Image 1 (cartoon, rainbow, N blue to C red):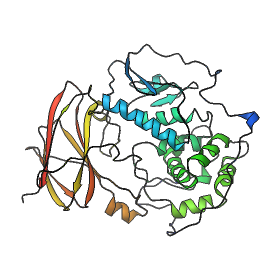
Image 2 (image 1 turned 45 degrees about the horizontal axis):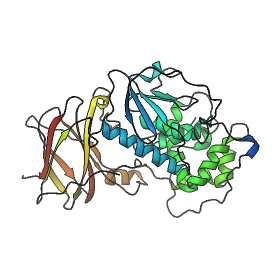
Image 3 (image 1 turned 180 degrees about the vertical axis):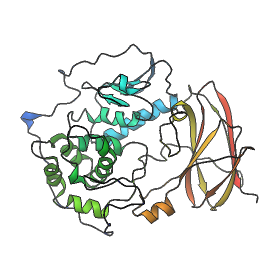
Image 4 (image 1 turned 45 degrees about the vertical axis):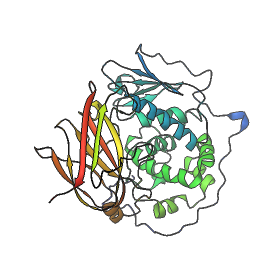
Length: 383
């Protein structure tokens, strides 16, 4: 059995340094045996609930179950996301994607405990927290449906807005069919590396061609080379930083040495996002799906202890260092990767160490509801 682990435990010792990628040829799909996709005319039509249409973007129709919400900023971010995934798969979205935001995906999806799913015709059901995963499936199904689970689920996990440090030996789960949930993070870590090595076009051809009959790993080796597993174990990062981690966020300029953030959180306005689906380590199922939020960047020039002050107890603050490079060792995770919830005292004041120069992401969360004015100040600790 493969072994999953956290940043404190290695499955194997990494051999760091420059590695030559094996030269392989991607498997080719016979023109007479084109793979099935969710675009096929014979895909059975999904019976959908009569939920109101809340948002329409270039490619998405977003429907809300009673009690659910998607703020205008998140609707736009879903659109940016599906466009990004399509580019990563060297394809263009060719249809409108119906997304049903639901409470409890298992009611709408086959199987027990599923938070979401994509049907054969590409209809998406998703509860908060799994939407980006399911939207990846919704884009990828236009390339091919019925993909082996290592590639199918691995791809969806690779584009979730969360870090991933769970890795193992991919040959131990590449041919697994049936129940696959225990391998999700392992597959996501490997598939992100594989896509990184092959590039969009070659990965897309692999995604279209790999199958259980001929062997999933055989197809991977045909695309990459026989050293795929050894190169992955030796050269993959210890932790993958989320895609688009700090993309499309405004930079808040300081006033002297103090950042003064003030805004109105209004779910109907494109500057406000929600629900909060970034799966922060301290995020709970009680407030994550029920929060609207705004995000901004600050540029730290002088590392040190800073004092944060918020308006009231309902405001939650998360800070996260923006990284361009993925930590390659456990020590680098400890020294380079920072992602924290801010804990305030009863006076709504907190001390946070910004120990690195450069850009930091700040998320300001508030319970979803009517528009509300929020503010946050960040200044050097007065001592």
